[in-house]
Amino acid sequence: MTSKASKRATPFVAETVKKDFPILQQEVNGQPLVYLDSAASTQKPNAVIDAISNYYRTTHSNVHRGAHTLSERATEAFEQARQCVADFLGCSDAAEVLWTRGTTESVNLVAHSWGRHFLQAGDKILVSTLEHHSNIVPWQLIAELTGAQLVPVPLDEHRDIDLEAMQALLDNNVKLIAVAHVSNALGNVNPIDKIVELAKSVGALTFVDGAQALAHYPVDVNAMGCDFYAFSGHKLFGPTGIGVLWGRRELLEAMPPFLAGGEMIETVSFAGTTFNELPFKFEAGTPDIAGAIGLAAAIEYLQQFDRREIVAHEAALLTSVYEKAEAFVGINSWSKIRNSAGIFSFNLEGTHPADVGTLLDQQGIAVRTGHHCTQPLMAYLNVPGTVRASFSIYNTLHDVDRLFAALEKAKLFLL
Image (tube, rainbow, N blue to C red; front, side, top):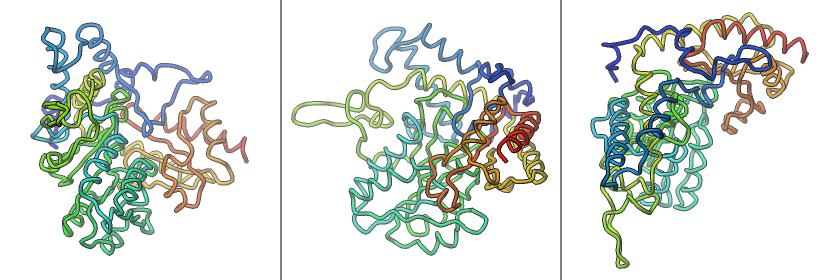
């Protein structure tokens, strides 16, 4: 997507950006907080906090059904947020943008609505070994219900998706390939364009988990060529509890509703029910109005910058990380600087990830430890888990220095 922000971009300076995030202006365990857990959830700028607060202070009402001013205001803001997301994704049809609670619900929506309706015994779903559990388990469940088969795609010697192995698995029984745009555990940026091309060669659809991608660089779903794309607001500087599923109109039109109730209906009688048009067919009940408005505010905040400057800044951070890691005795790195987005996943030899995480926290460094909801990947790596430091727009080179200084102290304590 060509960012409109490039014509009106605010200069990107990470030290200045960090001041927009109030939670980062504190000490933890007597040390200035260094937040390196953005792959789990990004922090929220004042613009998002203020947008949500202002909605509840001035605008709150239920949407679409009210005949009064507050409802009209809320509806307008809610649908403007949908259009904001559509523009952000390079989507020309805002009705293809469905509100969900997050990426997990988006996967389940497609699995149960599309999968129940279109999969049958003998069909295959391909998923990569890198996937988050939320892009594995829903497909497992729907495969059990329909008689379809879930087939994992192995990794190559570089811990990337093995495209040759994927191609060898393709046949006319493959109906869907589900893959992350960016690995949440290692940071790999997967070659979605090539995967889409492979899927199309056998008439299969592609579902892309974009939860880890959009905070790092622009995405154009139409140019990408995928059929479904999902993400979560809380990993894009927005609130928790709001997410998006984008799907091609012709697919969404053919899919039955996932949840039933108010809003998703056109007419109801005891003789039968007819369903609403897109996108409302998939949005039963009162939606997360404040969440949608907060997500739009997060997107608008991000779009004020030239995204190329953000990409360059995060690349500089990772370059510094890998330079320091190369000089650090005793680090096993599972991530790599090539084709990576914001994640450094590693272990200290002879230590448990949880112990390392605890000692870093005592020094004000927030990281994630464990299997990162990627147990098949951890089994492939033959480790119980890793320490994951994940970087975002508010991190600085000083944060990298703090991380490695803290690791030196942790190593002295543990070894």
